[in-house]
Image (tube, rainbow, N blue to C red):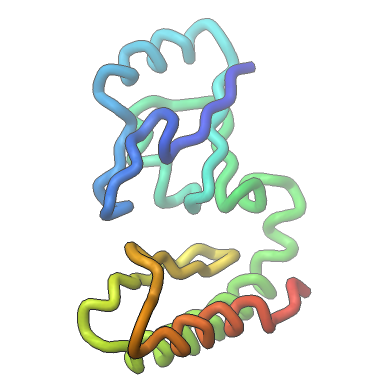
Length: 142
């Protein structure tokens, strides 16, 4: 079996995650490999998000940092989604408190939700960034 990460391995790291796709020069290689070996992609992205970006069909796709695609995932998904929806609602409120041009955007994943900062928060609004971290860190994993 050959296993690959998506972002930063078979796809470039890009500023906008929606623009990431398997590198064009790797697509024919990966398509040839899928006929000769068991291939897996393990990614931090949701399976639903990454599959159309792959441009080849690995035998296994494991998403959300190993949570999605595993047998026990479905049983825990309902609770995880509920927790993450609450996090996202709070994070959206926190972001509204930041000054314009803060460089932060949210990426919803089934679990965990995360915020991404293009630049470390400084100056006015920095405390809101801390509030955002505590929104995530203050919740139990259940």
